[in-house]
Image 1 (cartoon, rainbow, N blue to C red):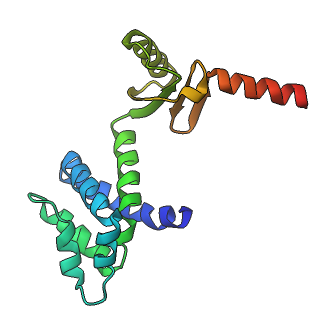
Image 2 (cartoon, one colour):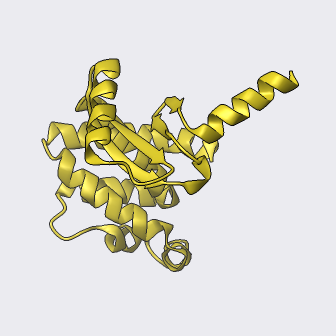
Image 3 (spheres, rainbow, N blue to C red):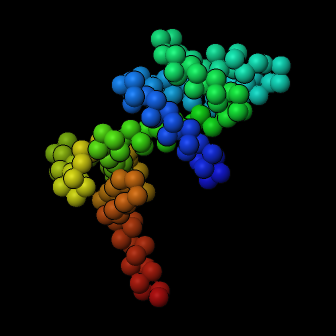
Length: 175
């Protein structure tokens, strides 16, 4: 996986630069997401890896209607270099670059039960204050947390769950 990320990083940077130069970051984001979903499908992987499929045809299978010429050329470059299987990683890295440029942090809040909107807003406000950026929150429910919540904001994880507190207490008592 880390090797795929290393190989995908320069392509993601190039894609982001191309999309920003054309002022079409949102369109590229959608097109890359579509191409990544298709490239990740096992049946599509078998087809894209078939030796009799030309690189132009392989790239053509992944182009969404209305994609600009630069995106089509980008997919052609990936096909020529046999890098189409990296599309899921490229799309993920592209989204990270786009979020950084837009000064947006994506945070996932996992709680033991569904959180009320007021609590989510207070968590969002605290994260905005901490990071000094706009925050997009995604929610999830995990009953194994027992209580509290875990906030995963990229490189920062804040574990305020009862399960996490019990695990830290157990470690402290054992050590």
